[in-house]
Length: 332
Ligand code: ACO
Image (cartoon, rainbow, N blue to C red; front, side):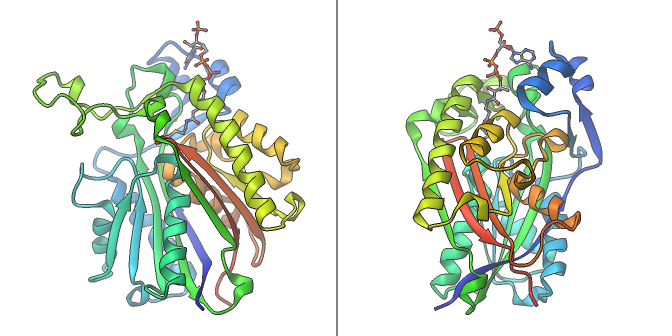
């Protein structure tokens, strides 16, 4: 049987910074409020002519180079995004694949909001374990600034842009394998976090530009409570089902939505501060890109070593959630 190994990581962050102080000149908020309620100090914003696919390509180039693979060996690209280059089609994954020069490979996007990276990890694992694919490039890329309403202080303080990518590759060595991935969803909470306009469910006869915009809307406080409850349950379950103690986790890499959510889940698992990877202060919430960007941070700081176990967890619009137990298994 083939197993799926997490071989390499890469990320890209646009250069422009939007600080809490900048936001305080745009909406009625303050650095103190944002820092206290979210832990975010600043986020990065893509240039006008920089698309989600452009950021995905930069992250992917790094992940491919670090995997040691030749591009011709990649047989599938999956992109997690809620801010694609184009609404509906073509998929951002096909654009990334072509910009990378990968030729005629399978490529598609998935929509699971902030849980997107955990979802594409599970897809890569399943395709590899079934024997259908060998080397899968997974990309979480977001230009959330393109779907953020900068007059809504409840959401615009949270989101930023960026991309992360990983190579997931077939191996016959079980010790290198991704141990488990959990994914879940519950549409009864759909209205907590959504882009209500612009799809088949919205009023197409409206000439009102705002009604046709794709801006995100969120019931933040309710989302917060469901996030803490669901994530805590899910990470406890994935550890129990795999007979792994939380002390065996070297790096807990949560979706970077809000420091208070991360702290609540970390405390429930009795994790020490040094086990918890935090990038929320400098990148904000980059949805499907946040987990690979965080993994890339510890990789580039020399903190992520071969064989070390990561616990990933995420929560987002849908509502969706997921977790994964992933040893870092770079090519020898
Ligand atoms: N600045 C100042 N005051 C604000 C701001 C702001 N930016 N935003 C809201 N407030 C006010 C509210 O109006 C409210 O005022 P009131 O008491 O007079 O009515 C007060 O602050 C409290 O508002 P809450 O919404 O209860 O604040 P909360 O502590 O819940 O923090 C936040 C809001 C940061 C959005 C939090 O709820 C959160 O992080 N939620 C979860 C987000 C999340 O994880 N989403 C899922 C992933 S995102 C995705 O999938 C794309």
